[in-house]
Amino acid sequence: MDDETKQAIKTLAEQFMNLTAELTKIRSYITVLLAAQAQQLEPGQPLVALKFLQDQAKVFLNVDPLEQDRRKFSEAIDALNQWKQAGGHQA
Image 1: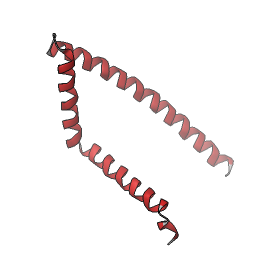
Image 2: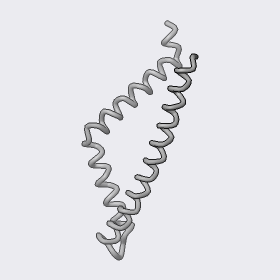
Image 3: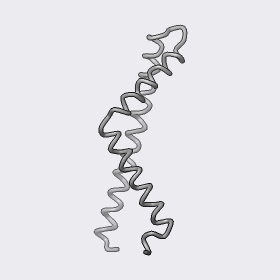
Image 4: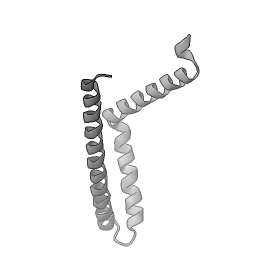
């Protein structure tokens, strides 16, 4: 592997780590917002409201075309990996 390829891989890995850190921050912000919203929806039973909000999020994810594409891509990668493990690539 030449130096240029190694540097490109290193840069990509650094960008991935930065992205992962930012996603972690976003998830924590969303959790705080969900908790605050749940408290407003059901002041006496915020866990019931939180469950409702989580269920609504799942509904939206199921109709999100990008999420559907991601799932299809993931299924295709899984199928390819299973095929390789079964020795299909050697046929």
